[in-house]
Length: 272
Image (cartoon, rainbow, N blue to C red; front, top):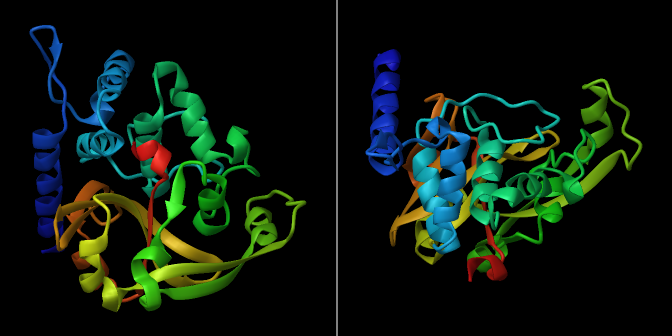
């Protein structure tokens, strides 16, 4: 029964991908294709085409084209290049953002490396491993956490000590920086989300908060307003083994370990 349901979900994701996202050669033109099927030439052409659109429209288009991309955990130390043929949750968000933010083809890799590594310096120690301790603060040029703004008095906080020394020790490396990093991170509690959804911006990055040792964020993806009270969640689904879209409230409701979410958006200067 589970296998049958999984096949149904996979077919849904693939059918959505065929409708929204795309490309097959037709009469010398690039028709609708999925992102991982694009050649380097087609990808460069897509970037040039998207430059005329607002950033929200670029990300929506790229997300729709990514539907159906196989899920696969990526190297923990981070890659210095794109890997559109398979993704995990963080590389999916990073690569979609880089494709949307880069001003031209030549800026694609520098933009990706700036998002993935501190100051764009490639290496295992500069990789933005932890969303709250590394990825968000090191990408403040691009992103802002609007969780407290949306939650107001309903905002909750989770406190953690991130043990970077132990993280690298388990991977055979020696960390010379501060052994632990204290984090106090805001989140919207799951019980308040139905009433807060109407105030969400049209496009956000949604980060899932769970109570786990050394970790605050366990998953992330893009939140897209489908209606005033419905937010679609586009993410790499381990259950479906691919990039898929689901209803955000449904996704949270079915996992009782989820405490709530952080909501992140692009800084104003990138949304103009």
